[in-house]
Length: 611
Image (cartoon, rainbow, N blue to C red; front, side, top):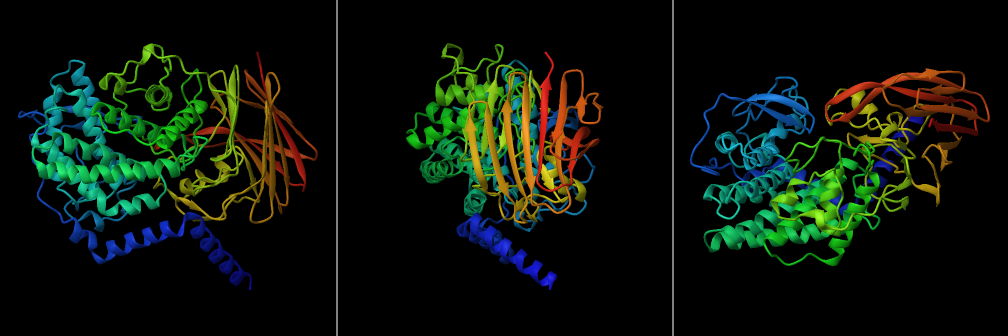
């Protein structure tokens, strides 16, 4: 009977989640999978002969030299020129069936590991980086870029293999190529025919699966629409004949319509983005900034006022998340190592560059980075130094996306509210991030990888990896898939007054958590009220990797004391648990766990900073 009741509850949960995802979106995903299965995409987008150069120059570098390539904005890996486009450098395994149609390539390939390790080089982040170095005087890199482009096109014919599988990856290749052309002499104004054929083949790949990308309600739709818009208009402006121009105009019009649609739907009025992720939010700001700069450069019609209003709100949201001393920010939500248009090699976890870029483009204001200017601003001849300075971020309640932030002179705290307008991929309701004097004292454990071992896939998105309460050893929401939870959290209340913020929720099992956060001069007072659980409620505080000392009701280091006060007995333990601040990188960090076993508990965690 219990088993039957559980199955019925599970079915109801899945049905309710489908409704929350949007029946149109669910239908689009089902259609995409059916069309793949019956071979529609093999018919619509047949494998064709490889694209041919020259692309940038008639000369090619000789193969065999060694180059360092940055993976996921963090890992410098040495490759032999030209690189192996199908290798996972972490395992040495490689995808070998690279002439199979992309629709026949599995999402998770046995033995290969994380598919993103193969996609990373084919995203072409290396291309604008090399082009930027070429612009700075390293002229030999032009022939290296030509060699790599020709080799990639020869080994990745249109619609064949793993590197044509994802429409977003295809779109990002287009955007990176356009940025590289801007940096290379007159290549942007006078492209070689190989460039136009390259872009056209990529845009044709995007179109048939566009509805599937939009059904995700995430960054995929924005990336693909941005590529259609920019590369489409590039074909219009640089195409040699009427056919090129007509094709480009059709694709650009489609991209512009979807860009307007996605920005209006996925960027909420308070600036929050649908994926509840700081790194994906940065990605969207970078893409929208590029699109707007491209539009101005090519003297194209402006977007709608709603587009610009949402873009400005997104930039303001990003600014509120940035720590002014380190440039870092909360490790919120999924984090896949994306750092677009990072031509000058800025640190992956420094978000000031994208904040500066977006502020200059959409707000006409300057974010000071100690004299550093985002390379895109230089490529598009926009000098931000003469602009008025951006106002310092203030405290704010962002209820649409589910955030509350209190900022003060020495730092800030961010509370993740139990609000889910879009599908959550992390069970992080009422997670709290605390920053003080440039240090992330209470921190999020991150994501690590989208295809890792079972323990990592369970831990990193789960409740235990966040600074919140886990009831009875389970997540706050039932997990339905690798990137999806069911029975999304809903707030019982949200309050935000000056230096105080609070919210609460009740989960599907009847457990209730209310958290209040208050700034009192030199300390944060965090009050957790918990009820409705069966055996145990555990408060976790993920901390920096430094020396900590645990007493009976206190944990301290040389700069911070965490005092725990409770209405009933609690047990404190200092453990080590994984943290990942960069994709495919993790280490163990100290975690203070406060175990509460009595019902109707009230616990205060007082973060007292030493002067």
